[in-house]
Image (cartoon, rainbow, N blue to C red; front, side, top):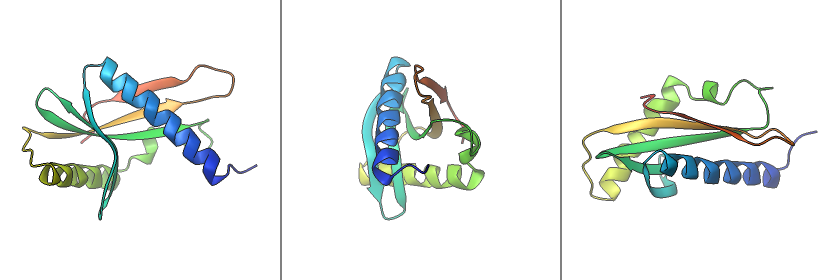
Length: 122
């Protein structure tokens, strides 16, 4: 049975909340969430030791369609890097570097979620 849009949105929102908590636990400062511009959206924008971190969050209920990390192709990573630069321009900040991270959330039914942070994919 296919999930409805509302169910997918709720799962994504849940994963983004868990991801933000995990990033802060690791010492990153969350600056923005769901930032949008003409070119796309950044799930979480954070700062870590003078670098801007563009974080893509992928939440899954299983691996039926492949792992969440596999969804981040080189093309997607490059687009996220460009979006990070656009965020910097919009917020008049010139960080030392722009880094792309991914947080995957595996939210199996009746199990605690598994949150994994992959730093510096691009």
